[in-house]
Length: 155
Length: 221
Image 1 (cartoon, rainbow over the protein chains, first blue to last red):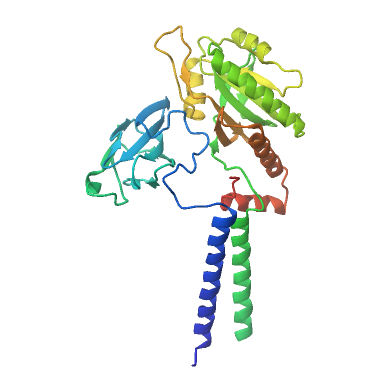
Image 2: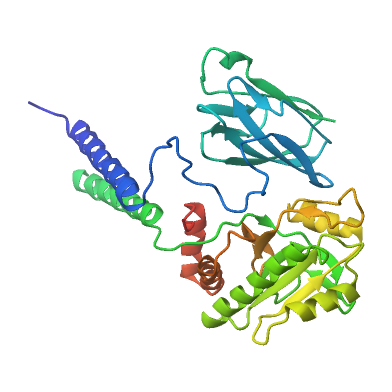
């Protein structure tokens, strides 16, 4: 069968990439101990505030213009679901899930992450413009997924 | 033409494989550049002003607490003694310093801090400075700058509530790591200081390798 040399080259390149990815998966899982998330808490990042636990959501001021939010996601809502901060504040979110996989995305910002049971997601964002920033669950999590939302009110 | 294409493709694959090996194997590791540490002007236990950043600063471990919080101070003392011992054993008798910033500035005057410093002193200990300042300055430095939570108690007789934390700041006044005070063991601390010292000592081409390590998030696990 005749195969055009360019096509042959790309087939070879694709095969090499498959081998590279295969090796990457093997190295990650066997040598580096990377595993897919499970029900058991796998990792808790160091340096988390002592109260950043999945038991309760809160917002607290660290100092002028700096806030922390411990955000708990559960079927089908966020706690807290309204966060008020002054304009120009930098907010660090610690995101937990109490049950299944959820998502956490704040519209019109760069904050977008998964809320994985047993793990803590962390993201910071500076809200320069006043307004209401909707946050939603963007990982399908069941019947009430579409009502799972909250908002950051920047005053 | 065909040969040149093959050589080009081969080179491309070799470079990709090298980059991949570097990112996965992480032969060079660095601590993340978390954020710039806050600039400040506070006073030490002798009442002398202390400013940061300043030229020639050592790697500094910032600790936070209140002298009235006896359990917390005991934890700070234990940490400082163990960390001093471990760092001295690893050859860091200089180049690393500790700074304790009070979260209870209304109570922790320079005189109170001087007495606390005497209680914490250890013969072979690394330099340890105790810093205080006005409430606003402490709020800006500890809360807004370092991102460490503290809140005065409703009862003025009680010390403030706070998160005991250790923050490692490099010689360029950049935050490189943050731990809970009870989370940081001596082995991890020495590893982190080793990484910072190696990175600080990198010159010429090796400097770029360290920048590559930052690019590929080659952080210790």
